[in-house]
Image (cartoon, one colour):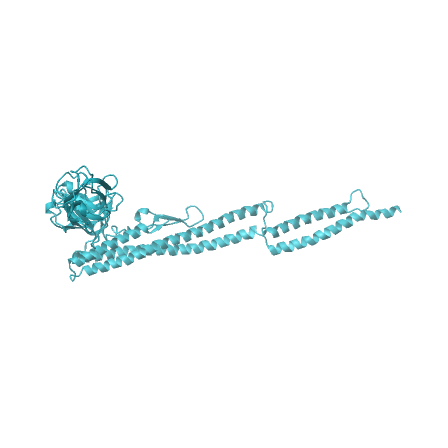
Length: 524
């Protein structure tokens, strides 16, 4: 600092010294005030270039360790999902072993063992479902084909932990079942109304039609509900009261059946003309099958005398040879009919039969009513002549062939079992096979519990790693904090100090500016 010489007034050295001190104090006060307002010791690279570099690297590592903690937590959660699936598998396998132990006793008969076998097959399917459905973010955890799972459990490249299934835990891999490939149909009984479909049995596997789904594994039966009189005559049955003036309903035996079709129908008398001796009526197909253009036909002016006789239900007033399969026996001809009255009936066309498909409980199921499967219902009409023309595809995966209609009887049944694709097959049909299955179940249980043990060990390891990483993250964060962040107590002390120095520097600068005034006394 320059020496003050008050006798020389061209330069006020004292004031300059005070000004320089004030400038330095202001800069230092501003630095400490900035640290107090931001909480950071380093607010720009010039504050501490080396410290900023070190702190930035420590910040990156601290944030990386936080992500590592998240990764470890996610890994433990994922493994917990896998553990849940494995735990449920052990419960199922224990039950499977118990069932096998039951079947190993000759106190059970073949039907009881068959029931246990079905249950074991269902359990095997559930094991496969657990393997397929135990997932994390869409990835199967228990499927050995998924491969090794790698967890990033460190900040740097290569700091990973891996996990994989050591054994194939699918039912086939555990030897608990064998997979059936393709659907299978096995006939258990069949009446004479059914014949073999080609070189197969009375019921064979067939494809699905339309939007229908194939049958699930279980027992089913086809049953004949009705049939035509024979190959040349249909059958008609009234489902409501006969029309007034009508004493009977029968099948037409003359004429060409141009619009004839099996199904349920409604006849409505729409008018009669006593002058012209005609009758008008409408016939509707209640099954909504493709029939005509609108599912109904309207006949206007069909000749009908006012006397007892028969009336052929036909598709037009003039095409007398085009009947719809039935005729009405009239009490007093046209005169006895009442306009507006209706009656309903079912007609089965010559050479056809009506069938339904029942589930194991005897409940009728939805089946195809046409070849494309676009029309469905709980029954269908099909040809019965014992040839390939009689093949009927239910649309649910089962096809039948009816015998010639003369050999078909109402109530005829064909019972069968349907085994869906990928069904899991288990054989405990004898005591020795059931005993061997008990050993297989024990071996399977060993594999699954070993997988749970490996899983638990890895989860425990990840817990230790989690604790270690958490400690490291806190220490790195502390180092970053020491370098980067301000000591608020110290900064407040320095700010107070420089605030006082600022005031004294200003006062001294004022005095220094006043000092040259004293030289004026020499000129008095």
